[in-house]
Length: 75
Image (tube, rainbow, N blue to C red):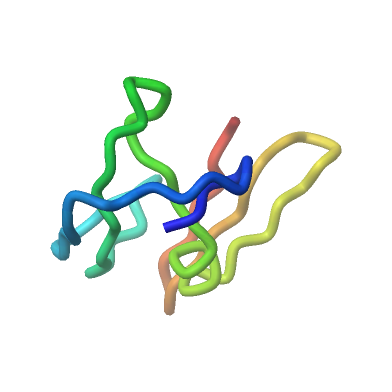
């Protein structure tokens, strides 16, 4: 796994299960790694792609949608 600063880290494993973000529910899988408390979760590119995420830089909001489910996430 390569993180934003280019550093490679070894994941502890992979978690797969039901996820709800902003009320949008789906099954997803995530790599589990130690980020030393910097984040609770990182929604990486595969997940952002699967919910057709659109980031509005003006408002710093992310719109996500999956089938008929939609949500706006505030940063």
